[in-house]
Image (tube, rainbow, N blue to C red; front, side, top):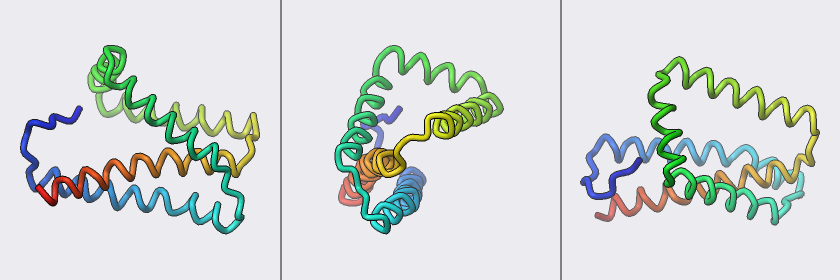
Length: 129
């Protein structure tokens, strides 16, 4: 959880810059694919952004804090196993359901663009402060 009352230090600014650069790299691949195929599905970009906003709102509730506490308590190995299980479930669902790929890529772009935009906003705010 971000504590907005604490002044930013140089290490947290470097971490935020790292997040912004990594975000650009994450958005680059699906965006290049969508532009190359010329098959952007605009409603799915909105769905990706909306899902990310809802997930952020839920993370600020008691349920989100409970999940964060549990995720911290299980340790590094447990977090690694949870991430591997999530990846297996997501890829298994994609292979089983075989969704419309342009819609899926548009959803990923919408979600990633929102997260990247928030990180860029926070970095600019931190640099100007």
